Structures are given as C-alpha cells and as structure tokens.
Length: 193
Length: 193
DNA sequence: GGAATGCATTGACAAAAGTCAATGCTTTTT
DNA sequence: AAAAAGCATTGACTTTTGTCAATGCATTCC
Image (cartoon, rainbow over all chains, first blue to last red; front, side, top):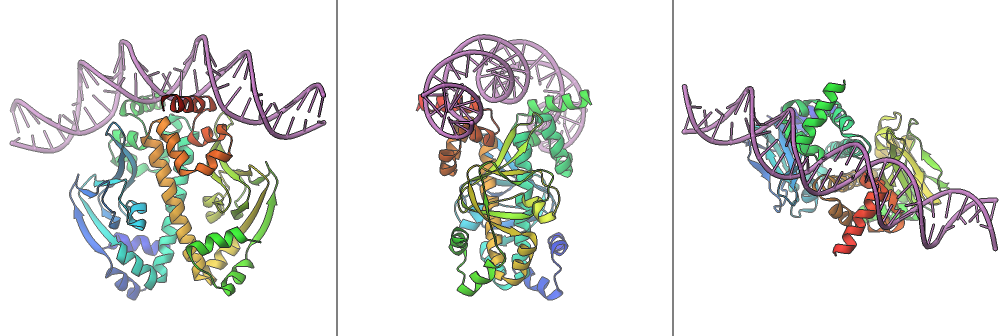
C-alpha cells in the first residue's frame, strides 16, 4: 500500500523507514469506481489526492454546461482543487475518475500536521508545487503562443501517456477546443507530415 | 532597501530581526531601465526577481516573431523563468522592464543556501509556489472555459492593477489575442452593459 | 446476438477571430 | 515647436473555429 506515493516521494527526497512509518499514519487509502466523483464544484476540497492506480480528471463547466478539463492525473500524479484545499473554501473544480482508481488521500489536518512535524514533507511539497507550477507555465506558454497543430504536438511530447490513454474529445476539452476541431487539426498534421 | 520584499515575506511568515539580517546578505539590489532585459531566451536564468518598484513582463516569441506575454510583475510580485532557474538550463522566456524598476535578485546559489540555512525561507518559498500555482490554475480555467468577454472581465477582477497600468495590446497578448480583437471585445462589453 | 452507447470523422454552413489598411489621438523625441 | 512613434479603434475582407447533422465503427450492456 502507498507504493507509488512513497516511490515518488523518495525520487525527490530519500526518507528513512521511521519517517515513512510516521507519514503513513497520516495517509488514507481510497478506491474510486470509474465516473465516481472525488470532488464536486461547491463542496470544500477535503483531500489532496495521489493516484496509485487508474486515472482522474479535473474540470470546470462552462456556461453551456460542458466540461472543460483543467488537468489529468495518472499513476503517481497529484490532483485536487488546491485553492479550495488550502483556503477550505468551496471548490470551483469537479474531479472524477476516468477509470477505476486506487488513491492516497491527505486531509487538510494531516497536511498541516505533516508540515509541522516532518521537515522533509514540507520540502517535498515545496518541490511538488514548484514542479506543478513549472509544468503549468509551460502549458500556458504553449497555449498562448502556438498554432493548434503545434499545441497538439507539444502536448503529445509533454503528456504522451495522457494522449495515449484518454479519449480525444477529452484532449480537445483540455485544449479548449471542440472535438471536431481537434479531429481536423490531427488530420492536417498527419496529411502534411 | 528591500522594504517591499520583507513586507511581503512578513505577511506570510513573521521574521525576527536576526533572520532578516541573515537573509539580507543573500539578496542583491538591481535597477533596470524601461525596456532593458533581465533575461533573454537561451540564457540561463541566474536570478529570481522580486519587484520593489516598477513593472516587468515575461514573454515568449511565436513563429511570427511577436510577443506573447506569459506574465506580468508589479511591486511585490516575483518573476523569472523558474524552470530555467531551478534546472539551470537555457531559458524559453524573455523578461524585460515595462518601466524603470528597482529589483531584488536572489541567485541560485543564494536560494539553495537560504533553503539549507533558514527554514522560514523554505516555508516562504513553498507558500509562494503554492500561491503562484493556484493563480495560474485559475487563469487556465478562465482561458479554457469562458468567452472572450467573460475572460476579459475575469482578468479585470483578478489583475485590476495590471489592466490599469499596462497598454491594452499587452493585455491582448497576455490573453493570446490580437489587439484588434481585444478592442472589439471591450466594445461589445461596454455597449451591451 | 442484438440494441444501445460512446467515439471519431466528415460535410455544409454560421460565427468568431485574424489580417491589413487607415484614422485620430497622445506621448516621446529631437 | 515640429516630427516621430506608440496606441486604440474601425472597416473590409480572409481564415479559422464552432455548430449541427450524418455516418461508421467499436465497445458495452441486456
């Protein structure tokens, strides 16, 4: 249990057995079936979630009521409405399972305690946030500076596992496009290349 | 000197006089004239930069060679090519001064030392990264889920000082639009409202 | 095994955004 | 004070993207 979580953790900062055991006490395992919600808009995000197995997506609904995907999470990735989690305010994001999932949850209380008690946890979170921010900056730069063809190619490079695993209409949603437009973009890429 | 930097720091975590003095030794002041570069694409980002006075922008160049603005920084804000800074790899961002600026710089060596020596510095950076990530998530959600009119209104709420202070063609660039389109979007908002 | 559902693609058309050129107004430069 | 540069706006036109409808294919569900 928690193999993926601690593997990812140790890739960034090596933990002793004792530290691992201590941290484990603050973690909660959870299984989620495909299409089940982890979080719904308006609820407070009670947990940061690390995916041990499966795949999740986070999205907002636009005025027409259709999903715009803000992010995905595969094995080893972290997902949650961070803003809602940190401030304990109602969430703007919806998060649900794309596949049957095994998750590790960290509650706000556990998170605060871990930061207080385990210096390496704070360091890990600092690095996690930094990495997440860098990745989102990169995605933002891609979105505002490239043609759709180039955006799609860049996402393929940046998130090959996601593009492979997730239906294309969700990639379209992630890019802020309709499925038809993404289909045509892909057509242009394969015909011209 | 460094008033704004320490004011922002103390808003998040209170420092003792001794801690302030210690941290000060790792900071470098720098003045930059309007239009001068802090960083050019291809160079390694040597410093994280906090704006004491003035305004900066970070941008990428698209295939047509025109600027797409990734972010602004006003007084008290932080700017830099974080990815380049952390990995000490060539930058993809250009950063320059919109106005004459007074800056506080933190080199990579200073940053690493501060993290090692001053626990509150690591905490501050963790919070800074978390806040930056939350803000960028919000901006991303806005960009993929809203009409241009709503995007502009949302940016007005999110960054009123920026919209007020910066020429509109830069706001257009920040939104991934041409200046003409933003002008028309603004026209539609004021006529319909 | 057949029906239903979800998904990607394509076509025809409508709506939105980009491009190019021109204008008028400031601000900056000299 | 005059000239130049920067900026926002507008109009005419082009290109891109969205919308709606239809099709074909694969997967899932009874």
